[in-house]
Image (tube, rainbow over all chains, first blue to last red; front, side, top):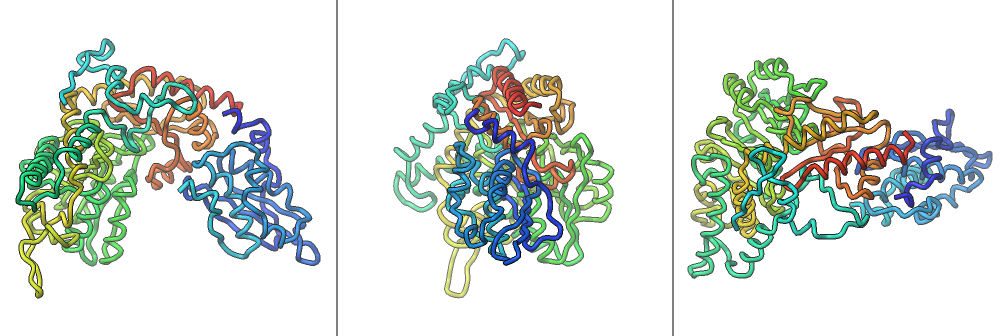
Length: 135
Length: 422
């Protein structure tokens, strides 16, 4: 248990980074976790060339895993190009969380990834295969 | 297999959950955490006693053939066992005749059968159907589909702050002359035991038929449909120690006789020509195709097991555990409990939220403590809306639970609060 809820996960949960809504913004997407109904939205601002991410924020309420995942993921997006984000492997998000995620919680961990992909691809994307174990 | 109810020193006249635990092979399995499993999720689906598992193995091993078809000994044997199970269900709920028991997959299918067959025949444009805000989605969505398809209106009876049906609102909704009132005997999300006798009488006075969703009731307390006077009743086998994939619809004979088939095919006909078909009599008219033969036999074994314990004692046992757990949770700061505090109208189900910790986090920490609970909206999202919460954590008791499980529950709550620093 202490493996899953390590201090840094709880820190991100209690004091999430990049929480809120950017206004104005260039990209916006919202999605939900069908297991629990938790909703998450993301807003992004692009750089001058409109090919990279200048700023990002996420909003919504959810469990510690989904909130920490969104906090950690959004932290590393500034300066990345949209193409880089589109090609991001969902495994990378799980690696960054760095804690063992059981099948029942994979959608919690990957909701931020799904919302981000929806934003940079301009529409809803399917759940990554990794999350399908959760049914 | 006969079960001798053990005498519990804690519940006068009752049985010992600790002793009953030995009847359930699932509790022999080691948990991931290495801790004693406190299984508090019967309301989702119950573990199976050895008697049920053995009845299933025995039926497949020694008594299996298709039913109602074969002119040979094995088929006659299987048919007799399958039909005996139907008789057990009828007797279990006080149905006047086993012909009024239709085997279905689960309570969801039972309600859909009524919504499609009775509903599409009897509910039309401008008519009304009444359900309640505390229902499981299984007793909401089929009525939403029916009413939107035929141009009828679906009304919801409101619930009080402490999780009871608002009887004045029920009267108001009934005053509009609905064709049907569909109501749960026990709420799966709140644990509320509804005053069914009164509700059914009010429904009939208003000229409505009354369907009871007994999925959370049949496993936990005695039911007598003849005394209740309802018109339809739905139950699921898997929540009452039986196998998954089997449930029952009970309906009054004259209603079932007048209803068209829900699904069609083999078994449910008397005669088929290339021009058409004549329907078999009830209940076979509603049982198209080869039924869940062994699952029905398994359900019969589950009923035998429950009746050996005695349904009144099952209810007392759960009431005892509920009272202890409700009080124990009330003593922990940060726990918000839902449903009525009165143990006479609250089944062995406690829905709660813990500080502002998400129920999924709660359930994950509980799992590591050896405590299995349900976290989520419990397929009752209108209930979550009513209390403006996304989800709850739900602990539900059954025959194999004991005070050690209640203690494990409170210990898991404290462990969760420690971890989240609340």
